[in-house]
Amino acid sequence: MIALPIIASFALLPYVAAQESLPIQAIEAHFTQARIVPEYFDTFNPSATLELDYAGTKLTPGQKVTKEQVGPTPVVTVTPANSSVTLDGTYTIAMIDVDVVGAELDEGVTRHWLVNGVTIENGVVSNSSATAITPYAGPWPAAGSGPHRYIVALYQQPSTFVAPEGFTGPLPVGVYDFEDYVEDSGLGPLVAANYINVEEGTATASQVATSAVVTSTLPAAAAAGGSSTRSGGTTGTGTGTAAASTNTSGAIKLALSPIGALLAGLSIFAL
Image (cartoon, rainbow, N blue to C red):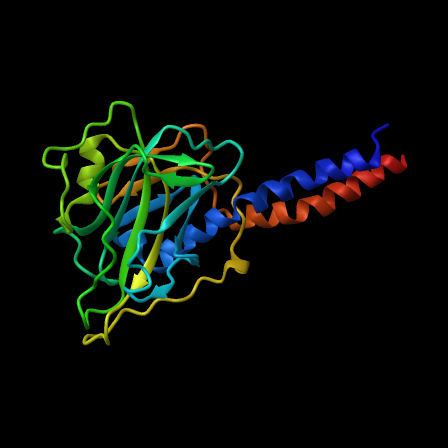
């Protein structure tokens, strides 16, 4: 005979698994809401979440801030989506300005931060032994150009990593093809990313409207992945993680399964 506490524990497992990956669903939704997907990334499937802390102020995804608020280098914290994701080895961290929603990005994006060889110590990104290609330079959008989307992205850096030609020394803020940089250097996959909105003055042109993300309405995914697909179609896939699922009906079944399983267990126990 199976004891009731054991039955209840089994019944709750799907629910716990579903809830564990909800933050990943939230950041994916934010990137879609901001039209970073598909304007810049065709797909976005991180295996961890990334938090930005500016002088003790932790920013939420897509938060609107002034350039003064994000002037100092942030403390970056990375949290695995689930227990199957490990954050060891070295990484590359970058901040890029992908401009306002609807901007033409074919000519590249603006590099505000690019550091190779960072590590993650107790969940915090450390650059103690890293190589800064472009030291952190805070957002500085042109006045009247509207709210710019600044992405902070963390890519896995393999042992075979070699910086592309022209990216071996200190470089100022400048325009470049970041996706080409990722591909040419062999970086990948995209482990985690976040973004903020920074605007200077009042926009002089009409802006494309976006809607807010209501986190409580998001379906929980079955698992977290670890990949992104660039506009050209190249895909990076994380190791040791499962692909994410956004099946809404499946999420509803997971949410209801603890109750159904528990009732079933009670029935068996009664027999």
